[in-house]
Image (cartoon, rainbow, N blue to C red; front, side, top):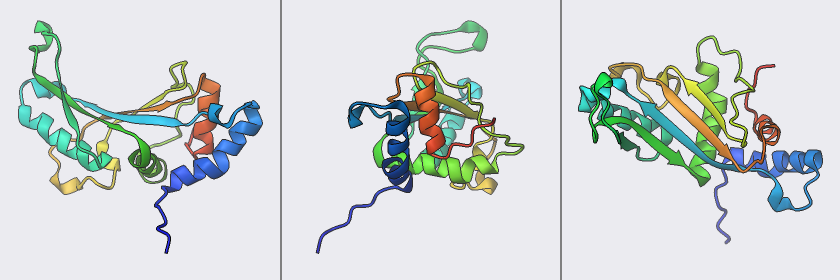
Length: 185
């Protein structure tokens, strides 16, 4: 009996719908030219991390729960006296997702987390960087169902960068629209 391999829902949507739509719309000569998701980077920067190392470790644990992959604690490279920041201090946490975990996270982001954001009116369609990468910020990390609301001390912000292989913003915007990203009009 053949083993069927698990394919995330978002990857299946890309393979069956988005890729065909992009091929048709942009008339690529080769199927390998079609833009696709490259990676997703999650980042939490903590200003209070300069005074409290435990806050950074707690944020890293929560980011690990959200991403499904161990978060890496980021450290300061330079000392800045006005921020009471010294070289080597813990100031945040980050995770880079690729492959299956990336597609699963994007699926949870679009279908579960974004609809739970208070006063959500859609993603800003101009948050691209010119090279096909999309960035968004979430003010409350508790919109993710993995976080137990009762066990958190403080509500933290979260930056999400979705990197694509698209050459420009229009291709990336079309790709993300086909993956059901809720852009505002």
